Image (tube, rainbow, N blue to C red; front, side, top):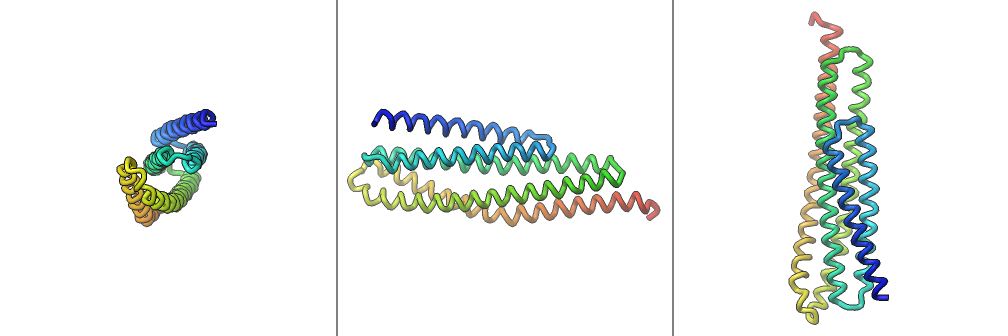
Length: 230
């Protein structure tokens, strides 16, 4: 039975590493993506799928930690699960930044094309694309908010784990340093969650300003086309 458990742990660890590397590669693809929007949406769909699979594997690792008979083994498994969750949070932050950079690049490209093009049909098409980009950015923000709520739940679970570790620390003195590290990680996670909540208003303001700038550009072009004498 112990041999089977070790094999299961190794397989779980290998899958976690695999999904982590695949997510990093997809995030880099998003950062380098020149468009169009459909390509960006496809990449984001793949990232969401990888995050879902990675989250399941981390939950498996946490379950195995709870099933350990020896306290030292359980603590080692819990520490590894926390480390993987921190890495997942880092990947989520990189994913968000890559999306913002890609959206900005596509927006700048479309502005250049809008200045070069003059017919009304092209203007309407670009407006529709702009609205779709705004909607995509809004969806990403909502997805990140959902991730933040999930991380809040995980922080609560981690706090419960810390309480259990504090009770058993009298008999497992060698785990005291690991306990302190896990406490610091939980506080860091809480700070990151507060940071995401503060950035939500900023993201909405940036989206509003981007839309306003776009509309102003369109009105300026229409004015020059329809009323060149003004």
